[in-house]
Image (cartoon, rainbow, N blue to C red; front, side, top):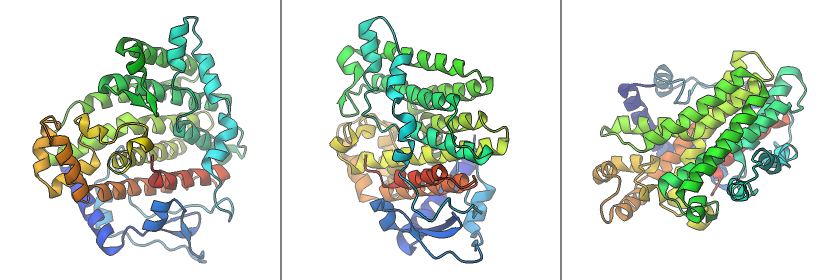
Length: 421
Protein backbone atom coordinates (compact mmCIF):
# COMPACT_ATOMS: atom_id res chain seq x y z
CA UNK A 1 0.00 0.00 0.00
CA UNK A 2 1.26 3.51 -0.75
CA UNK A 3 0.39 6.77 0.92
CA UNK A 4 -1.17 9.83 -0.65
CA UNK A 5 2.11 11.76 -0.91
CA UNK A 6 3.70 8.90 -2.79
CA UNK A 7 0.75 8.74 -5.16
CA UNK A 8 0.97 12.48 -5.67
CA UNK A 9 4.65 12.21 -6.49
CA UNK A 10 3.92 9.38 -8.95
CA UNK A 11 1.15 11.39 -10.62
CA UNK A 12 3.41 14.42 -11.09
CA UNK A 13 6.20 12.27 -12.52
CA UNK A 14 3.77 10.65 -14.94
CA UNK A 15 2.91 14.12 -16.22
CA UNK A 16 6.58 15.02 -16.64
CA UNK A 17 7.47 11.75 -18.35
CA UNK A 18 4.68 11.95 -20.84
CA UNK A 19 5.32 15.60 -21.62
CA UNK A 20 8.98 14.84 -22.18
CA UNK A 21 8.01 11.81 -24.25
CA UNK A 22 5.86 13.91 -26.55
CA UNK A 23 8.09 16.95 -26.83
CA UNK A 24 11.68 15.76 -26.67
CA UNK A 25 11.67 12.24 -28.03
CA UNK A 26 12.03 10.40 -24.73
CA UNK A 27 9.57 7.86 -26.10
CA UNK A 28 12.58 6.52 -27.95
CA UNK A 29 13.62 5.11 -24.61
CA UNK A 30 16.77 3.06 -24.37
CA UNK A 31 17.08 0.14 -22.06
CA UNK A 32 19.51 -2.71 -22.00
CA UNK A 33 18.63 -6.35 -22.38
CA UNK A 34 19.91 -9.24 -24.40
CA UNK A 35 23.43 -7.77 -24.21
CA UNK A 36 22.48 -5.07 -26.75
CA UNK A 37 21.28 -1.52 -26.79
CA UNK A 38 17.68 -1.48 -27.96
CA UNK A 39 15.61 1.48 -29.05
CA UNK A 40 11.85 1.45 -28.88
CA UNK A 41 10.68 4.11 -31.28
CA UNK A 42 7.13 5.31 -31.71
CA UNK A 43 7.04 3.57 -35.09
CA UNK A 44 8.17 0.20 -33.80
CA UNK A 45 5.75 0.35 -30.89
CA UNK A 46 2.76 1.26 -32.96
CA UNK A 47 3.44 -1.05 -35.85
CA UNK A 48 4.41 -4.07 -33.81
CA UNK A 49 7.41 -4.65 -36.04
CA UNK A 50 9.68 -5.07 -33.08
CA UNK A 51 12.82 -3.42 -31.84
CA UNK A 52 15.58 -1.71 -33.66
CA UNK A 53 18.77 -3.51 -32.70
CA UNK A 54 21.97 -1.55 -32.79
CA UNK A 55 25.42 -3.02 -33.11
CA UNK A 56 26.50 -4.57 -29.83
CA UNK A 57 29.40 -2.81 -28.24
CA UNK A 58 32.29 -4.51 -26.50
CA UNK A 59 31.46 -2.75 -23.26
CA UNK A 60 27.91 -2.56 -22.00
CA UNK A 61 27.05 1.02 -21.15
CA UNK A 62 24.51 1.98 -18.54
CA UNK A 63 23.31 5.59 -18.42
CA UNK A 64 23.31 7.28 -15.06
CA UNK A 65 19.84 7.62 -13.65
CA UNK A 66 18.45 11.12 -13.96
CA UNK A 67 17.34 13.00 -10.86
CA UNK A 68 13.79 12.06 -11.89
CA UNK A 69 14.64 8.37 -11.94
CA UNK A 70 16.50 8.65 -8.65
CA UNK A 71 13.53 10.33 -7.05
CA UNK A 72 11.21 7.64 -8.35
CA UNK A 73 13.49 4.89 -7.12
CA UNK A 74 13.40 6.42 -3.64
CA UNK A 75 9.61 6.55 -3.71
CA UNK A 76 8.89 3.29 -5.46
CA UNK A 77 6.33 0.80 -4.20
CA UNK A 78 7.27 -2.85 -4.54
CA UNK A 79 3.70 -3.80 -5.23
CA UNK A 80 2.45 -1.13 -7.59
CA UNK A 81 4.99 1.04 -9.37
CA UNK A 82 7.72 0.02 -11.78
CA UNK A 83 11.33 0.54 -10.75
CA UNK A 84 13.25 2.63 -13.24
CA UNK A 85 16.82 1.69 -12.49
CA UNK A 86 19.07 0.88 -15.44
CA UNK A 87 19.24 -2.86 -15.77
CA UNK A 88 21.98 -5.34 -16.36
CA UNK A 89 20.60 -8.17 -18.45
CA UNK A 90 21.92 -11.34 -19.96
CA UNK A 91 22.66 -12.12 -23.58
CA UNK A 92 19.96 -13.37 -25.89
CA UNK A 93 19.52 -17.03 -26.60
CA UNK A 94 20.50 -16.45 -30.23
CA UNK A 95 20.93 -13.70 -32.79
CA UNK A 96 17.67 -14.68 -34.45
CA UNK A 97 14.52 -12.72 -33.79
CA UNK A 98 12.59 -14.22 -30.84
CA UNK A 99 10.00 -16.77 -31.89
CA UNK A 100 6.34 -15.90 -31.98
CA UNK A 101 5.16 -16.50 -28.39
CA UNK A 102 1.82 -17.86 -29.59
CA UNK A 103 3.48 -20.42 -31.86
CA UNK A 104 6.02 -21.39 -29.20
CA UNK A 105 3.33 -22.05 -26.58
CA UNK A 106 0.91 -23.75 -28.98
CA UNK A 107 2.17 -27.29 -28.48
CA UNK A 108 1.50 -27.05 -24.73
CA UNK A 109 -1.95 -25.52 -25.16
CA UNK A 110 -3.37 -27.60 -28.02
CA UNK A 111 -5.79 -29.42 -25.73
CA UNK A 112 -6.21 -26.61 -23.17
CA UNK A 113 -9.92 -26.02 -23.73
CA UNK A 114 -10.71 -29.72 -24.03
CA UNK A 115 -8.98 -30.31 -20.71
CA UNK A 116 -10.91 -27.46 -19.12
CA UNK A 117 -14.17 -28.95 -20.37
CA UNK A 118 -13.22 -32.27 -18.76
CA UNK A 119 -12.73 -30.43 -15.46
CA UNK A 120 -16.22 -28.97 -15.86
CA UNK A 121 -17.89 -32.34 -16.31
CA UNK A 122 -21.40 -32.28 -14.87
CA UNK A 123 -24.43 -34.43 -15.61
CA UNK A 124 -26.86 -31.49 -15.86
CA UNK A 125 -26.79 -30.62 -19.55
CA UNK A 126 -27.73 -26.92 -19.28
CA UNK A 127 -25.09 -26.17 -16.61
CA UNK A 128 -22.51 -28.00 -18.69
CA UNK A 129 -23.37 -25.90 -21.76
CA UNK A 130 -23.20 -22.65 -19.77
CA UNK A 131 -19.79 -23.52 -18.36
CA UNK A 132 -18.41 -24.54 -21.75
CA UNK A 133 -19.80 -21.45 -23.50
CA UNK A 134 -16.68 -19.26 -23.28
CA UNK A 135 -14.18 -22.13 -23.60
CA UNK A 136 -14.62 -22.27 -27.36
CA UNK A 137 -11.08 -21.25 -28.34
CA UNK A 138 -12.15 -17.75 -29.42
CA UNK A 139 -10.42 -15.96 -26.53
CA UNK A 140 -6.87 -14.58 -26.72
CA UNK A 141 -5.62 -17.12 -24.13
CA UNK A 142 -2.90 -14.61 -23.31
CA UNK A 143 -2.71 -15.73 -19.67
CA UNK A 144 -2.05 -19.44 -20.24
CA UNK A 145 0.44 -18.50 -22.97
CA UNK A 146 2.37 -16.33 -20.50
CA UNK A 147 2.25 -19.04 -17.84
CA UNK A 148 3.47 -21.81 -20.18
CA UNK A 149 6.32 -19.67 -21.54
CA UNK A 150 7.27 -18.54 -18.03
CA UNK A 151 7.27 -22.14 -16.78
CA UNK A 152 9.56 -23.33 -19.58
CA UNK A 153 11.88 -20.30 -19.18
CA UNK A 154 12.11 -20.97 -15.43
CA UNK A 155 12.74 -24.68 -15.96
CA UNK A 156 15.66 -23.91 -18.30
CA UNK A 157 16.96 -21.28 -15.89
CA UNK A 158 16.76 -23.67 -12.94
CA UNK A 159 17.92 -27.01 -14.30
CA UNK A 160 18.56 -26.64 -18.02
CA UNK A 161 15.54 -28.72 -19.01
CA UNK A 162 12.57 -26.93 -20.54
CA UNK A 163 10.00 -29.71 -20.27
CA UNK A 164 6.74 -28.55 -18.75
CA UNK A 165 5.83 -30.13 -15.42
CA UNK A 166 2.27 -31.48 -15.08
CA UNK A 167 1.61 -29.08 -12.21
CA UNK A 168 2.77 -26.11 -14.28
CA UNK A 169 0.45 -27.01 -17.12
CA UNK A 170 -2.36 -27.39 -14.61
CA UNK A 171 -1.66 -23.86 -13.36
CA UNK A 172 -1.98 -22.51 -16.92
CA UNK A 173 -5.36 -24.22 -17.19
CA UNK A 174 -6.49 -23.01 -13.74
CA UNK A 175 -5.45 -19.46 -14.61
CA UNK A 176 -7.72 -19.45 -17.67
CA UNK A 177 -10.57 -20.92 -15.63
CA UNK A 178 -10.28 -18.26 -12.90
CA UNK A 179 -10.09 -15.54 -15.53
CA UNK A 180 -13.16 -16.80 -17.38
CA UNK A 181 -15.17 -17.18 -14.16
CA UNK A 182 -14.33 -13.56 -13.32
CA UNK A 183 -15.57 -12.47 -16.77
CA UNK A 184 -18.88 -14.25 -16.22
CA UNK A 185 -19.34 -12.48 -12.88
CA UNK A 186 -18.14 -9.13 -14.29
CA UNK A 187 -20.76 -9.28 -17.02
CA UNK A 188 -23.47 -9.76 -14.42
CA UNK A 189 -22.21 -6.84 -12.32
CA UNK A 190 -21.82 -4.57 -15.35
CA UNK A 191 -24.99 -5.71 -17.10
CA UNK A 192 -22.95 -6.47 -20.24
CA UNK A 193 -24.79 -8.11 -23.11
CA UNK A 194 -21.75 -9.00 -25.22
CA UNK A 195 -18.46 -10.80 -24.61
CA UNK A 196 -15.83 -11.99 -27.09
CA UNK A 197 -17.97 -11.00 -30.02
CA UNK A 198 -21.07 -12.93 -28.96
CA UNK A 199 -23.95 -12.58 -26.50
CA UNK A 200 -22.92 -12.85 -22.87
CA UNK A 201 -24.09 -15.70 -20.65
CA UNK A 202 -26.26 -13.40 -18.53
CA UNK A 203 -27.90 -12.02 -21.67
CA UNK A 204 -28.92 -15.50 -22.86
CA UNK A 205 -29.59 -17.41 -19.64
CA UNK A 206 -30.15 -14.64 -17.12
CA UNK A 207 -28.16 -13.34 -14.16
CA UNK A 208 -28.91 -16.12 -11.69
CA UNK A 209 -27.72 -18.91 -13.95
CA UNK A 210 -24.70 -16.84 -15.01
CA UNK A 211 -23.64 -16.39 -11.37
CA UNK A 212 -24.01 -20.12 -10.74
CA UNK A 213 -21.98 -20.93 -13.86
CA UNK A 214 -19.18 -18.61 -12.72
CA UNK A 215 -19.24 -20.18 -9.25
CA UNK A 216 -19.07 -23.68 -10.73
CA UNK A 217 -16.06 -22.78 -12.90
CA UNK A 218 -14.30 -21.39 -9.81
CA UNK A 219 -15.09 -24.52 -7.81
CA UNK A 220 -13.70 -26.73 -10.58
CA UNK A 221 -10.55 -24.59 -10.70
CA UNK A 222 -10.19 -24.97 -6.93
CA UNK A 223 -10.43 -28.75 -7.20
CA UNK A 224 -7.77 -28.80 -9.92
CA UNK A 225 -5.57 -26.55 -7.77
CA UNK A 226 -5.89 -28.88 -4.77
CA UNK A 227 -4.78 -31.84 -6.90
CA UNK A 228 -1.42 -30.15 -7.58
CA UNK A 229 -0.66 -30.97 -3.96
CA UNK A 230 1.55 -27.98 -3.13
CA UNK A 231 0.25 -25.91 -0.23
CA UNK A 232 2.37 -22.86 -1.15
CA UNK A 233 0.94 -22.83 -4.67
CA UNK A 234 -2.57 -23.10 -3.21
CA UNK A 235 -1.90 -20.07 -0.97
CA UNK A 236 -0.46 -18.02 -3.83
CA UNK A 237 -3.38 -18.66 -6.19
CA UNK A 238 -5.94 -18.22 -3.42
CA UNK A 239 -4.66 -14.65 -3.10
CA UNK A 240 -5.88 -14.08 -6.66
CA UNK A 241 -9.50 -14.77 -5.67
CA UNK A 242 -9.26 -12.30 -2.79
CA UNK A 243 -7.71 -9.66 -5.05
CA UNK A 244 -10.41 -10.09 -7.69
CA UNK A 245 -13.14 -9.45 -5.14
CA UNK A 246 -11.33 -6.51 -3.52
CA UNK A 247 -10.62 -5.05 -6.96
CA UNK A 248 -14.28 -5.28 -7.91
CA UNK A 249 -15.26 -3.44 -4.73
CA UNK A 250 -12.63 -0.77 -5.46
CA UNK A 251 -14.14 -0.32 -8.93
CA UNK A 252 -17.51 0.45 -7.35
CA UNK A 253 -16.01 3.43 -5.51
CA UNK A 254 -14.07 6.58 -6.38
CA UNK A 255 -11.85 9.14 -4.67
CA UNK A 256 -12.43 12.87 -4.31
CA UNK A 257 -8.73 13.72 -4.18
CA UNK A 258 -7.03 13.64 -7.57
CA UNK A 259 -3.81 11.99 -6.38
CA UNK A 260 -5.70 9.41 -4.32
CA UNK A 261 -7.88 8.71 -7.34
CA UNK A 262 -4.93 7.78 -9.52
CA UNK A 263 -3.42 5.57 -6.83
CA UNK A 264 -6.84 3.94 -6.41
CA UNK A 265 -7.03 3.30 -10.16
CA UNK A 266 -3.61 1.62 -10.34
CA UNK A 267 -4.23 -0.51 -7.28
CA UNK A 268 -7.60 -1.59 -8.65
CA UNK A 269 -5.90 -2.43 -11.96
CA UNK A 270 -3.40 -4.62 -10.17
CA UNK A 271 -6.03 -6.50 -8.19
CA UNK A 272 -8.50 -7.03 -11.05
CA UNK A 273 -6.04 -7.84 -13.83
CA UNK A 274 -2.38 -8.13 -12.87
CA UNK A 275 -2.66 -10.19 -9.69
CA UNK A 276 -3.81 -13.28 -11.60
CA UNK A 277 -0.87 -13.13 -14.01
CA UNK A 278 1.68 -12.22 -11.33
CA UNK A 279 0.68 -14.92 -8.87
CA UNK A 280 0.29 -17.57 -11.59
CA UNK A 281 3.83 -16.82 -12.79
CA UNK A 282 5.03 -17.08 -9.20
CA UNK A 283 3.18 -20.37 -8.74
CA UNK A 284 4.92 -22.09 -11.68
CA UNK A 285 8.27 -20.83 -10.34
CA UNK A 286 7.60 -22.40 -6.93
CA UNK A 287 7.20 -25.84 -8.52
CA UNK A 288 10.67 -25.81 -10.04
CA UNK A 289 12.85 -23.49 -7.96
CA UNK A 290 13.17 -22.79 -4.23
CA UNK A 291 14.96 -19.45 -4.65
CA UNK A 292 12.75 -16.53 -3.50
CA UNK A 293 14.60 -14.20 -5.88
CA UNK A 294 13.52 -16.32 -8.84
CA UNK A 295 9.95 -16.32 -7.51
CA UNK A 296 10.11 -12.53 -7.34
CA UNK A 297 11.37 -12.22 -10.92
CA UNK A 298 8.42 -14.29 -12.14
CA UNK A 299 5.97 -12.33 -9.99
CA UNK A 300 7.31 -8.92 -11.06
CA UNK A 301 7.21 -9.83 -14.74
CA UNK A 302 3.59 -10.92 -14.44
CA UNK A 303 2.63 -7.89 -12.39
CA UNK A 304 4.14 -5.36 -14.79
CA UNK A 305 2.85 -7.07 -17.94
CA UNK A 306 -0.59 -7.36 -16.34
CA UNK A 307 -0.81 -3.67 -15.45
CA UNK A 308 0.47 -2.68 -18.89
CA UNK A 309 -2.07 -4.97 -20.54
CA UNK A 310 -4.95 -3.31 -18.69
CA UNK A 311 -3.64 0.21 -19.38
CA UNK A 312 -3.59 -0.60 -23.09
CA UNK A 313 -7.08 -2.09 -22.74
CA UNK A 314 -8.25 1.20 -21.23
CA UNK A 315 -6.71 3.09 -24.14
CA UNK A 316 -8.40 0.81 -26.68
CA UNK A 317 -11.77 1.70 -25.18
CA UNK A 318 -11.20 5.13 -26.76
CA UNK A 319 -9.28 4.21 -29.90
CA UNK A 320 -10.78 0.95 -31.21
CA UNK A 321 -14.21 0.19 -32.58
CA UNK A 322 -16.70 -2.20 -31.03
CA UNK A 323 -16.08 -4.77 -33.76
CA UNK A 324 -12.37 -4.95 -32.95
CA UNK A 325 -12.90 -5.13 -29.20
CA UNK A 326 -15.74 -7.63 -29.21
CA UNK A 327 -17.61 -5.33 -26.85
CA UNK A 328 -19.17 -1.84 -27.14
CA UNK A 329 -16.78 1.13 -27.39
CA UNK A 330 -16.79 3.66 -24.52
CA UNK A 331 -17.96 0.79 -22.32
CA UNK A 332 -16.01 2.05 -19.30
CA UNK A 333 -17.52 5.52 -19.43
CA UNK A 334 -21.00 4.05 -19.75
CA UNK A 335 -20.29 2.00 -16.63
CA UNK A 336 -19.23 5.14 -14.78
CA UNK A 337 -15.54 4.18 -14.71
CA UNK A 338 -12.75 6.74 -14.92
CA UNK A 339 -9.74 4.95 -16.41
CA UNK A 340 -6.24 6.26 -17.17
CA UNK A 341 -7.09 8.34 -20.24
CA UNK A 342 -9.88 10.12 -18.33
CA UNK A 343 -7.76 10.73 -15.24
CA UNK A 344 -4.97 12.25 -17.31
CA UNK A 345 -7.46 14.29 -19.37
CA UNK A 346 -8.87 15.72 -16.15
CA UNK A 347 -5.59 17.63 -15.76
CA UNK A 348 -6.35 19.58 -18.93
CA UNK A 349 -10.13 19.66 -18.59
CA UNK A 350 -11.11 20.18 -14.91
CA UNK A 351 -14.77 19.90 -15.97
CA UNK A 352 -14.21 16.14 -15.91
CA UNK A 353 -13.81 16.14 -12.13
CA UNK A 354 -17.53 16.59 -11.43
CA UNK A 355 -18.42 13.99 -14.07
CA UNK A 356 -16.03 11.48 -12.49
CA UNK A 357 -17.55 12.00 -9.06
CA UNK A 358 -21.09 11.42 -10.35
CA UNK A 359 -19.80 8.49 -12.46
CA UNK A 360 -20.90 10.09 -15.77
CA UNK A 361 -24.53 9.62 -14.78
CA UNK A 362 -25.97 12.93 -16.03
CA UNK A 363 -27.33 13.29 -19.53
CA UNK A 364 -24.55 14.00 -22.02
CA UNK A 365 -21.72 13.15 -19.58
CA UNK A 366 -20.44 10.17 -21.56
CA UNK A 367 -20.30 12.08 -24.86
CA UNK A 368 -18.64 15.13 -23.30
CA UNK A 369 -16.09 13.04 -21.42
CA UNK A 370 -15.32 11.13 -24.61
CA UNK A 371 -14.63 14.39 -26.44
CA UNK A 372 -12.48 15.77 -23.62
CA UNK A 373 -10.32 12.64 -23.64
CA UNK A 374 -9.83 12.77 -27.40
CA UNK A 375 -8.95 16.48 -27.25
CA UNK A 376 -6.43 15.89 -24.44
CA UNK A 377 -3.22 13.87 -24.34
CA UNK A 378 -4.78 11.34 -21.97
CA UNK A 379 -4.52 8.46 -24.46
CA UNK A 380 -0.87 9.25 -25.19
CA UNK A 381 0.04 9.55 -21.52
CA UNK A 382 -1.66 6.29 -20.61
CA UNK A 383 0.15 4.57 -23.48
CA UNK A 384 3.44 5.97 -22.27
CA UNK A 385 2.74 4.74 -18.75
CA UNK A 386 2.01 1.26 -20.15
CA UNK A 387 5.35 1.44 -21.95
CA UNK A 388 7.13 2.08 -18.64
CA UNK A 389 5.54 -1.00 -17.10
CA UNK A 390 6.57 -3.05 -20.13
CA UNK A 391 10.12 -1.77 -19.71
CA UNK A 392 10.19 -3.07 -16.17
CA UNK A 393 8.72 -6.42 -17.20
CA UNK A 394 11.51 -6.84 -19.76
CA UNK A 395 14.12 -5.84 -17.19
CA UNK A 396 12.84 -8.51 -14.83
CA UNK A 397 12.55 -11.40 -17.29
CA UNK A 398 15.98 -10.60 -18.77
CA UNK A 399 17.53 -11.69 -15.49
CA UNK A 400 16.75 -15.31 -16.36
CA UNK A 401 19.11 -17.55 -18.32
CA UNK A 402 18.72 -17.09 -22.10
CA UNK A 403 16.20 -19.37 -23.79
CA UNK A 404 13.70 -19.16 -26.68
CA UNK A 405 10.86 -18.98 -24.13
CA UNK A 406 12.45 -16.13 -22.22
CA UNK A 407 12.99 -14.21 -25.46
CA UNK A 408 9.39 -14.96 -26.50
CA UNK A 409 8.20 -13.38 -23.24
CA UNK A 410 10.19 -10.28 -24.12
CA UNK A 411 8.56 -10.17 -27.55
CA UNK A 412 5.13 -10.76 -26.04
CA UNK A 413 5.69 -7.75 -23.79
CA UNK A 414 6.36 -5.61 -26.85
CA UNK A 415 3.22 -7.00 -28.52
CA UNK A 416 1.12 -5.89 -25.55
CA UNK A 417 1.84 -2.29 -26.52
CA UNK A 418 0.97 -2.68 -30.19
CA UNK A 419 -2.21 -4.73 -29.94
CA UNK A 420 -5.46 -3.27 -31.29
CA UNK A 421 -7.98 -5.55 -29.59
